[in-house]
Image 1 (cartoon, rainbow, N blue to C red):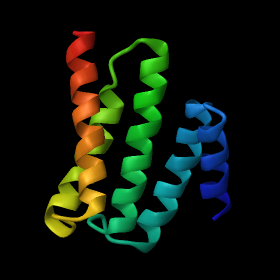
Image 2 (tube, helix red, strand yellow):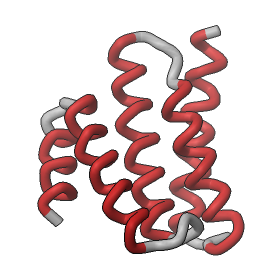
Image 3 (cartoon, rainbow, N blue to C red):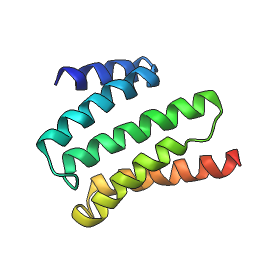
Image 4 (cartoon, rainbow, N blue to C red):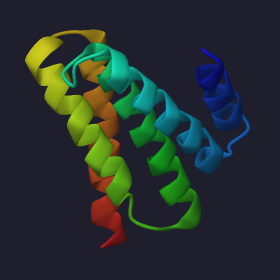
Length: 105
């Protein structure tokens, strides 16, 4: 819970690099508890995608790492959470990242 709070604080402060560091710690901890296809893992993949997208956007660089994480989240959501709000928000961020990366080319 502490890592989650810290990730949220740094994200709120627009320190996406530090937020991603804490989200990576959350991912490592959750992978010890949950199977890879679990929604708790997908949630962290989404957060990491959001962190890395915002970091890349702020630096004016392509968001390749964000794309990797959103694809992982989307794969889980397509298998377990299709037709849910969770799937919808993942799909929206995926679209934003895709458009941004195309713009950066």
